[in-house]
Length: 288
Image (tube, rainbow, N blue to C red):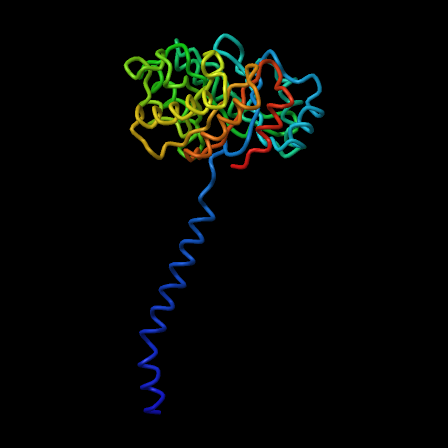
């Protein structure tokens, strides 16, 4: 009896530490289970309201076969209904989800009347197809009125409705551009009210940047300035790459910059009408 008691006493500290390790490991595992990637993680193609695919099923099957897992589909502008074309939208959502592709809806919000824009945006978030399906996320394209008051009024009205867990995405200019100067483009307000920033990283309009190095440099500067202007090194960034007649080499430079600078919320291309095969191929082969 005495021998057993001594042995147990000696082993108690050891057992205590083992229990602590087990509990800590369990806690970390449970937290990891609840940690979700941003909804925009992955590789995507953008579509505007004038260029919905004629045959969504064929289009989505093609994208999926090339490694594309997200469609960014414009559903409205401030001067249209909240859902401009519900019949076409329903078909795209169905085809995309049949191919395990996410659909992020986006709206060009003028923010001349931010509360009205917010109401339309909320309608988009709440929209259900006849089969009960819905968009996987929503993004606001902020290009017209860009002051802090308008952006915050819009974002807070939406947030009040959707709650803190719903991911809000802001489509922005690249901060490299003069029009995105923080003196009149409210970067801090956007960062404080949206979960993901998706800059339009369009380098091809500058002739001198039409190369792999040019695209790489422009993308690198875009990432750096977003962190500088928002004063958030850990801000979630989704890069929208230039698909306006861009070459394989340019897209490679864009993707290389995304990889080397730790882009944490996915990459995509905004094409000229429809993406070229080499653009989809290059994006699809990119390893995040």
